[in-house]
Image (cartoon, rainbow, N blue to C red):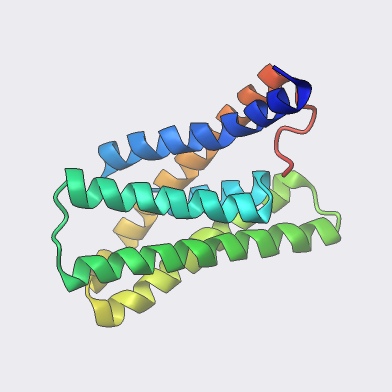
Amino acid sequence: MMNGEMMKSKEMIWPASLGISTILGCVLLACIFPFAAFATLAALTMKPRNAMLLLVGVWGINQAIGFFILSFPWDAQALGHGIAILAAMMLAYAAATSVLRFTKSKSAPMMLSVPLALAAAFAIQQLALRAYAGFGGGAENFSAEIITAVGVENLFWFAGLLALRFVIAQGLGDKRPIAA
């Protein structure tokens, strides 16, 4: 394999790992998928174009598994929720990206920037989904207990996938395991 082709193959390991994680997560978790965690990881580790493609792919896999394997109903409410999830995830990505950019401009340490980016992504995603639920249905799914459980799930997924990113980077000899 030529050096350029080898580099391209190495660059695909992380997105492929996220794709596999998406499939496993969707099958195991059904509709409670850690979209904010994925949006933050994309903002943290990928160039914007690749991040957006990944996030649309993550959403597409989630929706395909939901509708074709887990038998989500084919009705306007379910389809509307799917579109709202995509919009909320893109807003979460924008929030995480903005926080990371801002904290970088202030020379904040990554130990502060990363949790702030995840918190912003999660908050914006939940606010966007709650706003949609106000007219699209499902507002009862936004109790403190449910939001806390979803937040904890996002936190665990984020930590686990960030650890995976570190292991992959170490295996590939990447000196900057979190940089885009």
